[in-house]
Length: 181
Image (cartoon, one colour):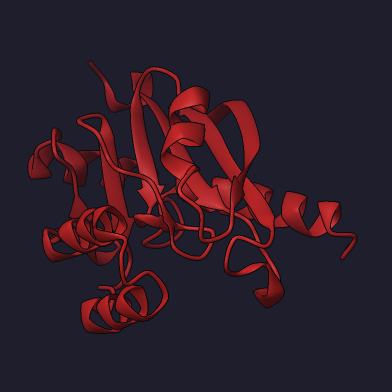
């Protein structure tokens, strides 16, 4: 199968004001589906800031194909648990100690959240792409396949186009819904 035939979608969250932290508000979770370098579908829903609904919301929206997740954390410390068709992507390595401290402080009794988030962050692999080194994790996609996919979708910089598009859409929608535009 040619890379341009792959169905790939980017996932990212939108803006939220700091007073939404602690489950006091919602933000956008957007999925932008690409077939080759063309957008095929856009979908979005809301997730609770610091909640636990991002994985379920993601699963309801996702289609066939490979998900490029912009990290494992969404909407504060909400999270998406990656599956065998997911790639967690970081352009720079996360500061695992800082994340662990924040989780201990704000979610001291939530072992599941900490295990998922820290498990992914501690399992990241560094790979070299044509746009530079990035950090990825996937429970079901090999590093050579991830590198091939990233090389195809890194059009302008290290961030793959599906994630960049999901970021732009989620940020714009959340700001519009908050009346900030």
